[in-house]
Image (cartoon, rainbow, N blue to C red; front, side):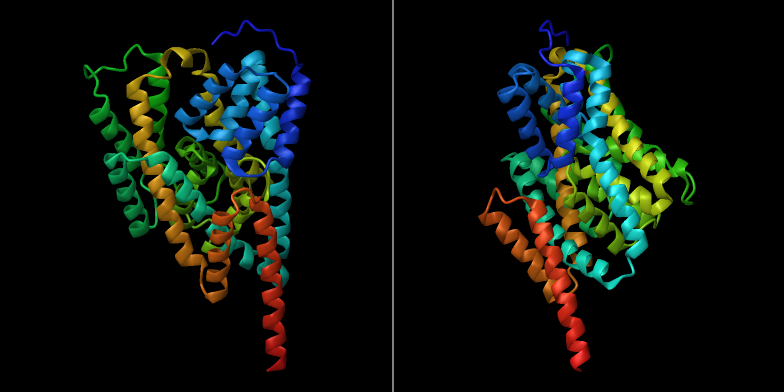
Length: 396
């Protein structure tokens, strides 16, 4: 999309803004998208309302973490490929550095009781947080459409039953809903439609197989490229995919380490998907973190900048929207199922159950409370419970 309006800000100012947003932008994709609108559209007047809405629509339509894609598009509006590249890097870099530092600390001091106690409380709170997030996603994404509810319940049940996700079910859900809601006029409906082919072709790549089972950088690259392609809308959509591969299929992390990785993503600013950097660090150190982060975010970069010039013309096509609606219903169902699976693994006693329930109640009653504050409180509770247990053992 061509934009004739000249930028009233420099590329340096835009990069500095996204560095700041990536440093203190807590709250998940919806909050981050809201910050961008408040700052770039309302306060600074750098981006027009029309450009923002088009960027948000593209971010919701294409696979990839919503907030990161929206930031990339904001950079693209006036500074095209260079702006998109620098804005995306500036947005992701602060949280990547944080998770690498936390990964180093985790590997060095995981055996220390205080570290274990922190993650004992934090892991339970994360269950409450992602439980509330899945509820909000379900309410927002599914609506009253009975067919979407059927897709949602099918994927929820499958995820709970198999404790993994099946990529073909996601692709099949999108195609099924597309064929019912906006059937093509011919078998070659998408031929010659560049916007549609960009949106539809990439999920097919999800069926790429990953050879071998050793912890190699090549495996990490292929697996996390698939992970980046899988995410639709919310960073939490990557949780069931990562759980199925990182824990169940390849055994790179155990259950507790995976929950700790999700917790790290919740306590750091920026996109939730940055948890892949922490996972990569645990698997293969700093090279693993770098490869995992690059492989996850590169697909979302490609599928933001490639269709951007054509999105105004093709983005509202009913076939594409129907496909994404079907995939989104499947993804939200898998998220809800993953919450149940992770809850069964992580809520092991009355204390963790109480922390998770209290987290849910607080989020239900106080809509604007920051999630990092809940994580901090849960960490303190974990430390206190650890001290009480140790004192009880001494008294005995």
